[in-house]
Length: 323
Image (cartoon, rainbow, N blue to C red; front, side, top):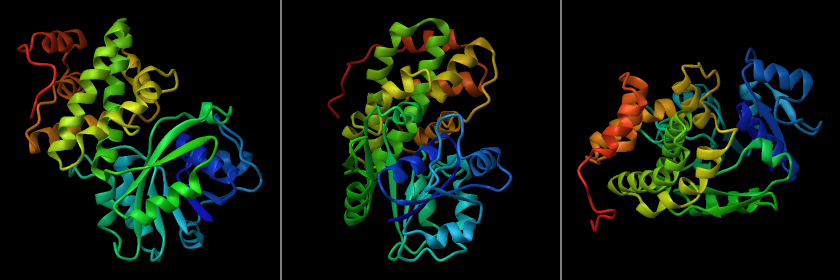
């Protein structure tokens, strides 16, 4: 299968490496002036992995789109709309678009698949999401993990799971596109909170964060029309180890750096997703105290310790709500 992976960052390069490894004809596409693209084009490696000669590297967007049967997109979530405006200039009929990024559009509160659908003929171009745990640093060492592919089209997700599964990544067929997208996006916010706790030396509180964070996100997913149980699957809870504990988690590192007053230079999608989730919590009337506390710390200058105190001072409630 001919696959073009658009985006040469950490995850995009890993996806290209992986899909080539399991036998697909892979092109790794990036922006001509982007440092990560230039390094891969000139040196065929980055800080995480080395490309084999079988991977084609190109900055020609038209060629990258038109050669592919499947187009995997792995860029910053907040840039997806402008990127789709460029991609949609070319013929997408009969192609499958797979989103390998995790976020919610801040300006609209839309899931990323909804953004893509504004630019395509849904009858002729299929959209899927590929989410779940894992780090390039582990995959290149042969450490396996499990992920999930979801779509509104049953045939599309079944085809992708069949084509993309291997002994390195066990793929599961998703059953709830809303939950898969919201859960995957929200785990980055919980990851930032985990980093804030690490920065304070409150690591023992991360267990409670996992339990209450997943419950909080499950209620939002349910209000949005998804299956609340999705929050406890691979898209969200299943990704907690890689996001809340791993030394390689950008979102966790961002939170830890925030506490110490250091600037974190790499992409942490959870920052803008925090804004988006606050918007959704208001729109769907869902109480999300952990997300709100994260927002107050990142954007309202509230001290982390004060935000935690406020969470602990909330009115006592039953652990699980019947409805």
